Amino acid sequence: MSSESSFDIVSKVDMQELNNAIVQAEREIENRFDFKGSKSSIKLEKEELVISSDDEYKLKSVIDILQTKMIKRDVPIKNMDFGKIEAASLGTVRQRVKLKQGIGQDEAKKINVLIRDSKLKVKSQIQGDQLRVTGKSRDDLQAVISLLRGANLELELQFTNYR
Image (cartoon, rainbow, N blue to C red; front, side, top):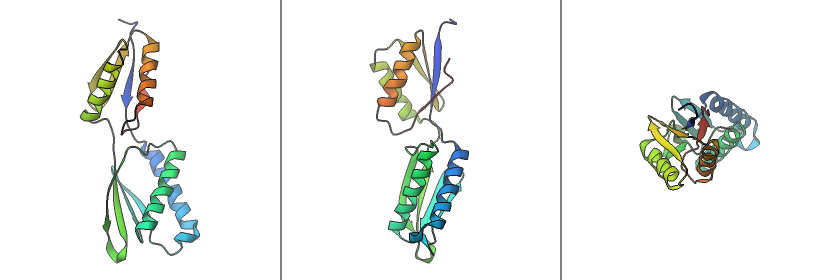
């Protein structure tokens, strides 16, 4: 049994890196000429971002700046679930962005089906908000990782606990 190798498939957002990306984005917004006098802000409230700005165009610019900073810090932007743009106080607009932590049951089932259909000699099982893949051959496990990286999923996946 000790010859079995395994790894876990998880989907998490590193909150410290996200916080660093928010600080960098706010600093850039503060210094940019096109945002002078603007009421743009990015706030992190538990598992949700609240982005606000003067109008929709500036809001989109703030989101673009934030996503650029997130990419540079290896924070997955696929795990962002954008809400609708709503009117806020003093003529500003606001958008809430939920951060997806963990793999939901539907996504876990899709990943399980992908692994099963690959005909590789591995077993995958759902364990809460993550999946564990086990197999005798490390090459098969590497093939599963390559398969999942190539698959177009709604979540950004990380592969941890590789043994």
